[in-house]
Amino acid sequence: MPGELRNAPRTRREVIEAAARALIAHGPGVSLDAVAKEAGVSKGGLLHHFRTKQALIVGLIDAWFDHYDATVESLLEPEDTPGRWTRAHIRATFEPAGLWSHPSVVTALIGVPELQQCLDVAAARWRQQTDSDGLHPQRADLISRALDGVTLADLLWRGQEPEEERLQTRDLLLKLTEQSGPLV
Image 1 (spheres, rainbow, N blue to C red):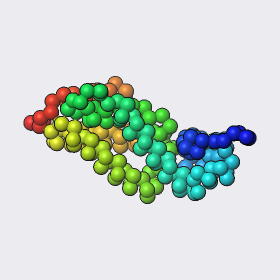
Image 2 (image 1 turned 180 degrees about the vertical axis):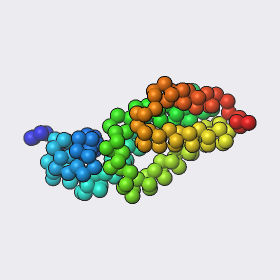
Image 3 (image 1 turned 135 degrees about the horizontal axis):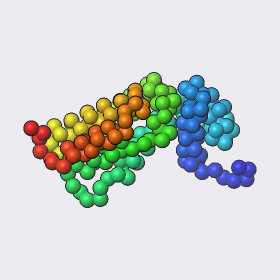
Image 4 (image 1 turned 30 degrees about the vertical axis):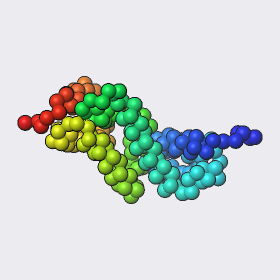
């Protein structure tokens, strides 16, 4: 884009999305050259935003969590009712995640040491949201653990569960938020 000033945050976001697409096309061994080409920037432009391939992968991790958080926020019910955060997390977990859930992207992120640190921070934030949601702690914990299982199953056995069963699981978890007391 000769003569045109680029918007740094937008370019950074475009590079991250291009990295996800390049991972899908080329696998975990994707080169920075392939990412730069996919993003429509020079390799120098890519390195301006992400000094190393590792920094780019960490940017992908951050974008992965940002996408999930934005999905949760978009699914929050407007009224302040018990279980609204938990219901938003349930719905977000069952939403298609597009680029972010593709096996090539997930595989590239799983082995990155920074993933655990980001996951710990995100999990603490999500736990705080659901713990202060007005549901009994036993109920909230059961739902959170079930969502962890759904996420793991999605990563390991992507597409092997019939959609009808997934929706039944989602609906059952949503039903658990209709009461706020203990399960027994």
